[in-house]
Amino acid sequence: MKVFSEELERDILQTIENYLDKRLELERQGLDNWDLIPRKVLMEKLNISAVTVSEWEKKGLKQYQPPFESSKKIYYRKSDVYNFLAVK
Image (cartoon, rainbow, N blue to C red; front, side, top):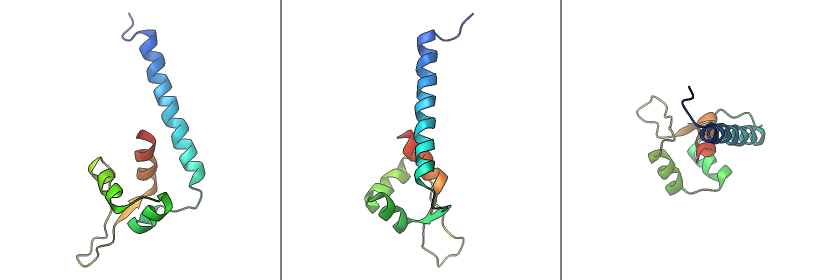
């Protein structure tokens, strides 16, 4: 007994393949070995505004902040950015 139709299975596999292709391409482009990147640098690298980054955060992009009360610098993990961009 099949749970999904063959057409749905093909669509699911195609979606996964597209995701993996995007993810691989983003990894190839990011050969600069950064893991955590400051918000300002992320905006410069992707040529985006602070408003765009804020919208991405609302849609699930996770930010990281040092555990010091006086520190206001925000960072993003490279893999989180790649995954976020590949899904969108």
